[in-house]
Length: 327
Length: 293
Image 1 (cartoon, chains in turn yellow, blue):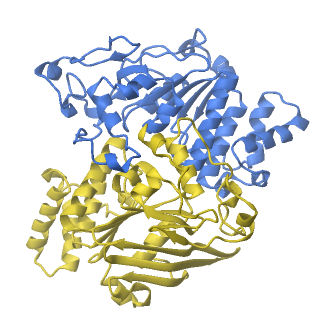
Image 2 (tube, helix red, strand yellow):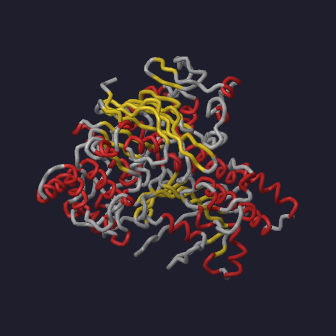
Image 3 (cartoon, chains in turn red, brown):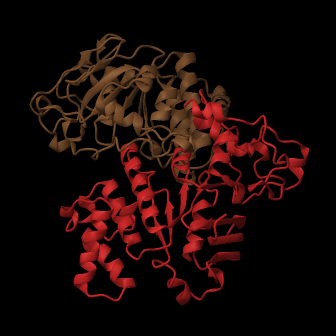
């Protein structure tokens, strides 16, 4: 792998609730290299957004965090809030599914971008506004939208404004949490294409959170599959699609790529009642006695990590490529 | 503003018809019109030969259980003061089911969407979004409907649950012979769920026809744009769509003259700016509204 920009090691995030402790992230590890995109995939409640928020240092104060989040030479978890805020925006920026909940409704699109730029750069107001105009153009927003307020823009345009704000300070890492889930398919394509272009232009790295495997195929270099707070699989995008490894990954793939609807039986375990053994065993078609008793440890073979008792690194006979390419 | 503008369709028993388009194209409005949840300004909706618009409120009320909507967000259709048990018992009582059979039936219904009986005493606000959606779905299906309008029924659900829900809808259609209007912008699901479909743009059908031939050979430029927006699951094919996709979903209150799609159409001719094309039969049971086809 290229030199990692961000490295997350054995990240544990726990919350105390009235009904007990829940581990929303339980030993999550991954690394993102320069100019690389990692997609985190998983169903709701699997902990993918919490991991993203923890990298931004935006977890609520009562969260108990352990492990390591290393950005270049700095261990972010050891940083004081003041030190951390030097990374936010300038080094690491984030965009969300619902741009409307992040944009200020009473400030025009152009001024919001200028504000973000001015907050992190020493410049005059005039310079900031000029920079905002350049950014608007860069993300494909017509010039007349500079003075428009967020509610006057379409969902796609709002997301472009968010992207422009996130890029205002030229971050090295962009975290995008379901950036296109709320958009029409046509607009989704446009936004993904925009992210591709910007990533290449600025040699940015991206952490993209999605539940849509189509988005993964379109964007990812590396894919991380999360389930019930655990990273089940971490592999290169070709491996993930052409030789899906973990039974959970294969089941997800079957749902979208299969020619008939093939549901995954059962439902996600509740984080308050952690199951013994492999968290996926109750729904796994390959589960054996060992899976019900012992929690599988991450194993790495040929650059691919899996948490599965069956994983030996040999994926022959698990080929789904024909099924995938026929769609 | 014309949300739905001169569309015709028919759905038979056991058939699933897909309605596809970007947000604001009028697909949800059309779904509501079919169930007489909205009154059309002009035109007719008939169910088993009788004109729904001519039925009295009372007759319509008798028919309602047979015509069921399922929406993306079940919140609006579940009474917040009812428990899950009462929500599911009510439709069964309406059908005159004996009291002692109701408990077992409810258990059966919950099992079909993979929910357990521990939910029975909960109220809607104590359920997760996915659970609410599934309760809304089985409540609608408990009525044994003949015709279902499913408007993005699975959009708020996780992948694994999505498949369960759609599978259930399919089995109701196949086993009980219910007709289904499946409204969605998720083309992958539409392909799996429907036999015929219509592509809607600013209130009009741009193309109607057989689902499979639509995906293999989309005729209308807008259809081609939609199909090319379908993200491939093959990473080798990424970014292969050569900027086929232009513009954004238009504002329905400001529909352009001529062909409504012309501002976004890569092939437009002068004729398209002035004259609106009608739906033409192009063979293969496909109809297309385009001057160039």
